[in-house]
Image (tube, rainbow, N blue to C red; front, top):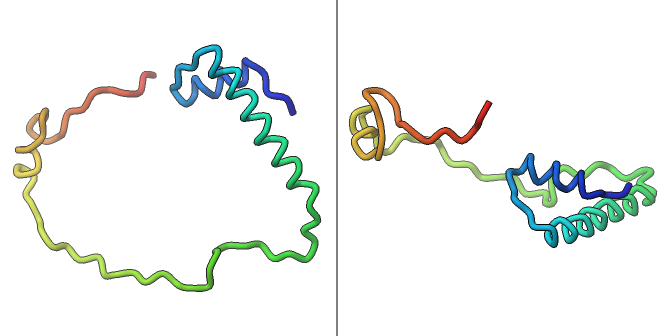
Length: 96
């Protein structure tokens, strides 16, 4: 599969990236290398190979989830730069 300029620009748009022409060219090369590598992996015979879920056989040691300090709703809002009576106010980052 070949990567063209339109594909790179679409991915950049989805990732909210602004790329220069030079960066678009470099990204086209990089993405092509990635796809070539994936195609090479598809050539490997994996017959009889069990899927790998974890890299080690060790188990995770998890601690109890214990509340150590609680603050009230008002205390949480007191340190917020912007808030109303009930919520933190943040800038809108997603347009519809």
